[in-house]
Each structure stands twice: as structure tokens, then as C-alpha cells.
Length: 341
Image 1 (cartoon, rainbow, N blue to C red):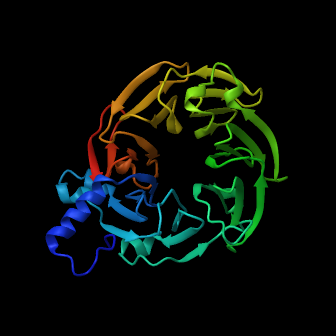
Image 2: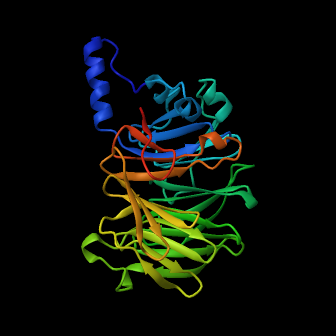
């Protein structure tokens, strides 16, 4: 459904309202369906739109194929983050996480399955949830955001099992070290913290902004994005986008990018990043900028790599941010087309 419009409004005004809504839209989050053929995108109005990647990528695709197959009101405020399990789409906004069955969404039956709210310090506290992270080995979900804590939820029982405390300001991003039960978190306080999930203890703190080669005081100290690959981490935000060796807490490569970066990911032998500006940036691990591929949004907040083995024909990179469009890259060299709310 579309966002609510007063009932007795003439049709022309409804169209103007919807046009203004699209003009001021921000897409904060994306998540690929378990089958790999659909993409969910969440916006600042609390809506989730689901696009058919298989239809949009088809040789017989029309303009209508690039519109949502279903749009529904998921949250009262922005949908800051989403992840998918093998059956569910999980979305989070202000203070709570909700679950939706992918099978029901695709039948256009968009009723929430459940909702959970972490145990906040006071009943009046409704902090935004900025990041969701699945921990498959534990069958758990980690939530983090405005209350400066990492909350772990058991996905089988729906109960919150622990809270990890250490950050002194908002948490913006999370990443999982898959070979060991450890999670990285980055936040407004300028730190990246490494947590051991077995002991529920913080085992390492990197104060990125205190390293001269990374520091950019005019941009602030906040960490807005991070990713990890074994013993390596890349993070950025106020400080420069930097590749770190985790065991030695050493910055090894500072990437020459002035604009603050909001999303970063490892892909094969490259690092992909995006943030202020239209481009998806492709970096060699050595720091060399391999390519900048322009998109249609003036700023980017999320990248999604669809690598589901069940749908190799839908293997794409999608990028979204400060517009109503989701750019689709069928290879890393150019934008093939855009999906649109």
C-alpha cells in the first residue's frame, strides 16, 4: 500500500503528494530475498518496497518491471536496516525490530509475524536501531543503535540474551568475523570495538581518529561503515576510509577519498565503498582507485551484493540513498538501470 493520504483529497492532489514524497525520499536499507530473485528496500517514510530482480533483468523487461511488486507500511518512522534469514525479512526502525514472512510478502500479504523491543533502560527511551547482524552459528540476531549497546536476540525464542556495553555514543554499524564468534561495532564515539560472543566481553578497541594518517577533524570522529575479512577490517566515516590489520591494530592502507563513506564491503580482491556523492568506488587493497561508477542518487547510504547461489542470473550490485531510486549494476563497470519506488 502507499503511504496514507487523506481520504477526501482530489486525485490530482494525491498525485502531487506522492510526487513530493518521492522527491524527498531517502532509501536507508536493502535486503535480498532467500531465493535471490527479489530485493526489499526500506525508506524514510517507514515503507518497504519489494522489487522483482528477475523481472527487471529479463530480456522482456518493461518500465513497469522496475516498479515494486508490493509496497507496504512497515514502521511509523524510517526503516534504518534490514536483513533476511532463509524464511524471514527482518526490519528495524525506532526502538523495535519486526519480522515478515517472505512467502507472505510475495503473495502481497504483508502482516507482521512478530515484533520485539530490546530491554532499554527506561520505558520512555525509543532509540533508533541503526544496524542488524545475523549470527548463523548461534541462530541469533544482534541489534545496535542509539542506546550505545549491542543487544543479542535468540531467533528461536525471541528473547534477548545479553547486552554488550562499551560505546559511549550511537552505534552506526556492525560486522561479523565469520571464522570466530566475534563481532565488530563502529560508532559516533570514533571507536571500532571487537567483541567475543563466547565471553560477551570487549576484547579490542581501536580509536581510529587518534591515528594521524586517518584523522580528519573537520569531518568528525564518527565511524559510519565497516567490513571485515578474516584478520582485516576496513572502516570509514569522519576519519578516512582505511584498511586495518586487526591482530596488530595497525592501519595499512589509507584510501584517498575526501568524502565521508557510509557503506563499505569486501568483494573478491576489491573493496567497494559509497557515501557522499553519486559514485560507487572500487578500490585495490593497495589503495589505488580502480574505478568510480556514477549512479543516479546524489548520495549513497547502502550497497547490496546479491550473491545467492539459487539465482545466478540475478547476481547484481544495487546501490541506494538520497533518492527514490535503487541503481542496479549488472557488472561493476556501469549502471544498467534503476528501480524506483
